[in-house]
Image (cartoon, rainbow, N blue to C red; front, side, top):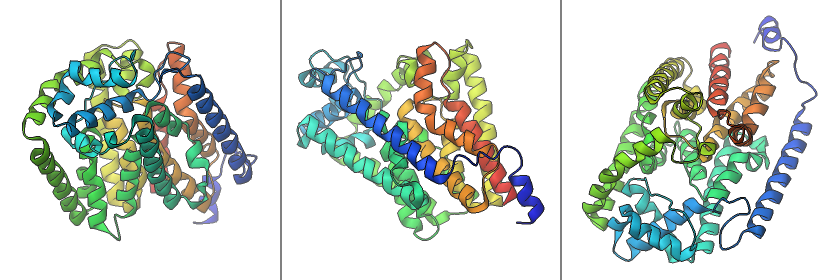
Length: 392
């Protein structure tokens, strides 16, 4: 990079006071505060219910109950509200219903969960998915240290007992193995079949980057997982899933999950007062533009697939919840690595700081009947990534 280009990169306020040492200190403070709140919440919980009325690890109740039914030979009952809810209430008597909106591929991956008692199973699940998440971020940004665990979306996945850390680990593993181990990369991406709305554009990115072996391995893995569900559970479980599909659309359009949990462009438009029809239009336009930007940029700079695929995935999907913001850790780690290599632009550090705190900020704004901030953070990170890809 020429001296003139470097000057353009570093023009404006440089936030030099936010050094690497201070950033690590601040993230340790955030991590300590997060752990303190988590311990307090667990300690004050009674029979699995948190002090603020939120059910502790309520989503994991859905997963564990699904495993319990499947292991008992009643996999199709996962999509029967009364029977699924009955198993959940056996663990937490006063719990509200946590729906199982996933395809049978996730049921296959959930199958071992009920082999352990609920709380031990939850601990193993969080430890395993957290380790995968930590490995992926540390491979991408070795300097991250504990900072990647301080990211508030990690705590959200622990509180809700959700799979956002697993999703991030699979995206990260697929992206990290893409060049040297294409078949392993494809296997990681193939396992995303458990969350098809977040896997939908992965083939587009692989085609744009001409990663044909990875694409083939992804398809083969997805087909193998689907075949395994048919062998183990039969066709009836797929009939149950498709019969419940309209309910998932109702959940999205009517915000049946509390708006504190939503982070998509679609729900952002609705929260601002737009109609459902308008939300679909805006979601489609934003998603199409993000998809086009991803394809064009990957063709120009292939390694930009690492931040662009997670960002575009989140901007394309209308069904996006707070725990899915764990995926933002991948583009943030890539941008931090790039900034450390070439120097940060004047406005790059504050954007990254705001994105880092977005999961918490969204909860605060939602509590005040204001829109969540996830879409704005995604678009800001997309702009940073596009500039990085064009100037380096």
